[in-house]
Amino acid sequence: MNIIKHSFAVLGMIAAPAFAASPVSISIDAGKPGPVINKNVYGQFAENLGTGIYGGMWVGPKSSIPNTGGWRNDVVGALKQLHVPLVRWPGGCFADTYHWRDGVGPQDKRPSNVNGGKVDAINAVGTHEFFDLIDMLGADAYVNGNVGTGTVQEMSDWVEYMTADGGSPLARLRARNGHAKPFKVAYFGIGNEMWGCGGNIRPDYYANLYSNYETFLRAPKDNKPKIIASGGDITWTEVLSRELKGRTSGISIHQYTIAGATWETKGAALGFKENEWISTLANTLKMDQIIKDHLAVLDKNDPEKKIGLMIDEWGTWYADADASNSALYQQNSLRDALVAALSFHIFHAHAKRIPMTTIAQMVNVLQAMILTDKEKMVLTPTYYAFQMYVPFQDARTVPLAIKDNTSYTLGATTIPGVSATAARAKDGKLYLALVNTDPHQAVDVAVDVAGTKVKGAAGKVLTSAAMDAHNTFQNPQAIKPVPFSARAAGGKLSIKMPAKAVMVVALEE
Image (cartoon, rainbow, N blue to C red; front, top):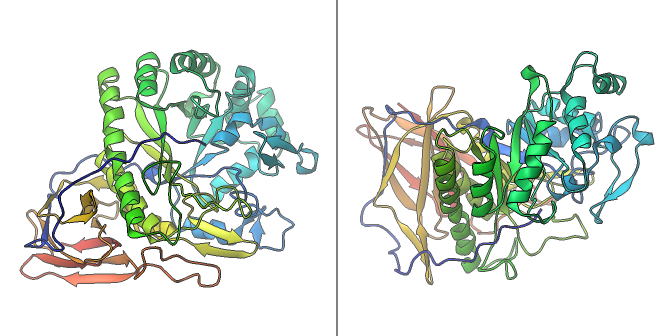
């Protein structure tokens, strides 16, 4: 799991007033529906890092911590509230040295080994256990295969083991291991970060490897996963979109958000100053241009738009990961909730070409939904952001325009004060999501829906007095969403958006 590095860019040089002369005006045209936001944009990533899986999610069936088949009941129950649509596993860089046969069969006979020289892979969680989790969550599976230290035969066998039915020898082995019916694999990734931990290879060489591997990934027509190519920077997207047309459903990229100007000087998860608040949010907003750059290449080489851009690792990465607790463990604050919400808005804006993303990661690692310590569990602000945005899964975007937006400025950096997105959800309601990036100033937002007199709005808002407000095992509810409602006057809706806040409301039409 590495970083595509981007230097910090100054986003503006002109100081903005604390308040605009008039309210921020948001116009929604609900009569012109746009692309559907694929529910898999809200996917999750689970990798065997520290207590990301072992302890954090999996405790084993003999544990005193309540569990179902080894998976923690409290964690699974909390994740189900997010309607998790997709889970990526086993990596990440962990996948680059993962051999699937080590994780099937009786658990007491599975080998224990060191994966990548770092992680003790006890292999208690293997293919069958992963699909047990998938079933409990009601999610789809995104499995990553091992190109780095694996073989074509090994990967071919794994896909057959998971998907084959009838008299296949590997299907019979799967049945002997306790699962007669085939597993459903929605996505299968050929390798991970091949430019780095996956092998340090060049894109043209990987394109040849991919074609070779993909040829032998045989699955029944009615149970064939969508195959994902492991991408990188623009050069990788250029080569892969040109060479793999017709052989891939998507090209993956990874983009992490840091606090500060460089990867080497990235800031901390907590106790940060305002300059790291604004730099983190400014770095988050770079995702939009990164996506545009990759989509420009895809539009050139794939005008039929058959190849999706898959952002299967994203989120915050801070300097104070506590390796004594868990590899890449970090706390999670209100700032991370704003990072998630701003990212959602960007993904929605590119819904036509982004069918899937997976945040890194689910539990105890990087920008996690949940933190655990033995039997204790706490939900993070990022968890609440995902929960608030559940209505946007499979919702249809609607055009939205912002006029007279505020700006938030600190030093030489300026970012938009208000970010917004709107969509018609499957329940028929029109939802509006707002982010106020300014940590000091509330803002008035006037909402108008074309052709409709809005009666009011009801939903939730997430904010706090402190920029680094976070939940702990001692105080697990220090920050959580609270109800919000507003009534319209004359068909016009006015919302007082708190400082440093995320809000999602359903509009009453």
